[in-house]
Image (cartoon, rainbow, N blue to C red; front, side, top):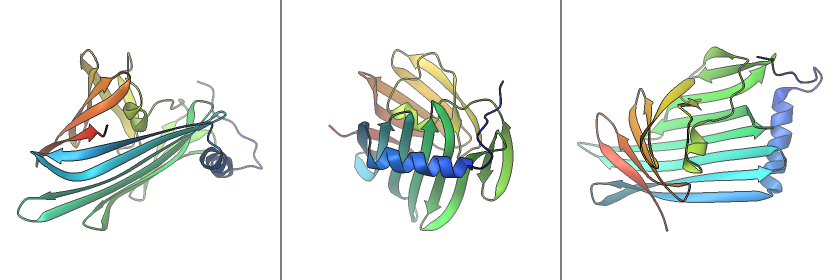
Length: 204
């Protein structure tokens, strides 16, 4: 696989920052999806994800907040940003907080032609294979024949399995996320965790 190459005088972070600015300020196409987080019959949070396209750049963002009460109340805040240029992931950041304290913080970038992922301060080289599909796109289109997607949160490719027509399950160390699609958009995500089961429901 050919390594990703960029002019030595211009860092990949500079390129990513410029593309991100252009993509956010001058989007040629933008899509925003809002979901309710449901547990049982109660609304316990929200998730908002956006996809902005400008020229050859695509910017994804996810922001969610979920509060689940068991013996205590647990509030999870999650944010993610990723930038693609020419169909390839070039940078990203994500953070998960539990009751206001950072639990997982990650970022991905390209260094010397190779992907580097850092999770909670620990770096891992991912090689030069182009990353062209990651978790945020699961909200905007069906995986189709794809059987994996990149997750910067876990610093690895996660397995996707097709369960039925327009139904796919994503597997991670946290549990299973089952995505249901209508007209190409994800309308429901059922999350199965050891501590609880809940789901995201697309607002109409």
